[in-house]
Length: 302
Image (cartoon, rainbow, N blue to C red; front, side, top):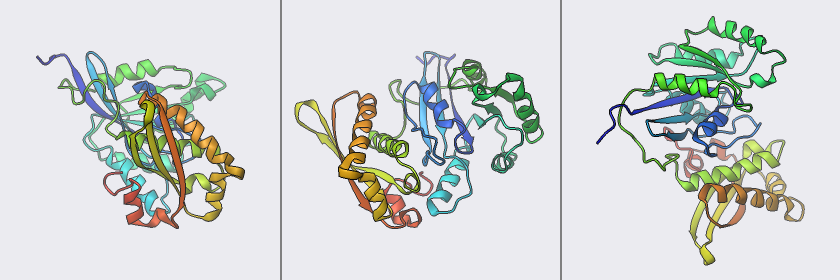
C-alpha cells in the first residue's frame, strides 16, 4: 500500500564550473556518483543521483558547468545543462561568494527567467570567507538579478547549513510515488560510473592540456577468476604527446592512474577487480559527432 505521506521529486543543480555541484550531489547521496576535481568542465554528462529515505525520495541531477563552448563536445555539455532544468520540481542555482556577479552566472540566470520553476540561490564555499557576514554582499548582488525562492549560504566541506538546505528542498517536493528502487543510486550504468572514476584520476594526476583532451570508455567487463571482475577500458587522447604523458616514464603514470582508480571502483562496486587500461589516439575527437556518440556524449542524451 502506497504511503500517502511519501514525497518524491526531481531537483536540478546548475551553475558555472567549480562551484561544488558534484560535491553537493555526492554529499546528499552518501556515495561518490559524480567525479570531482579542480579542473573546469570536470562534469561532462548529466548525472542523476537518487537519495532514498523512509518518507521521501529525491532525484538530484548534477549538470556540466555552463561555459562558452569552443567544441562540439562543449556545446553538447551546455545544452545538457539547460535541458536538465525541464520537468523538475526545483532548481538549485549554485555559486560561490563573490563581490561581483560573473558574466557566466548572468547568462545562466537569464536563461532561467522564463521558467515557472522555483529556484534557490545556493552559495557554496562559505568556509573560504574571513567573516561570514561578507556573504551579504554576494546575496545583494544576486537578489538584483533573479527572484529566488530561497537563499542558502552553505559549506559542503564543513557541512554547514546543508541540513537546512535539504529541509527547504523537501518543502518543494510533491507527495507522490517512489520512482526508483531503494538500492538504486543513479540511472547511469556501472560501466559509465567506472569510466568516470578513471577519468577523475587522470584529471587529478595530470596537468596542462591533457585533462580536457581525454575521454574514457569501458569496452568490456567480465567475470574473472577468484571472484574478480575483469574490467577493460580505453583512455582516448588527441595527440601522441598526450599518450606519452598518460603512460609516463617507464609506465609510471598509467600505473598511478590504475592503482588510484582501482581503490574507488572497488568501493563503488563493492567487489574485487582487475583493471586493464589502454591508451588510444583519436585526433580532434571533441568535434567529431561519431566519436562523441561512441564515447557516451550523444546529443540529447549527454
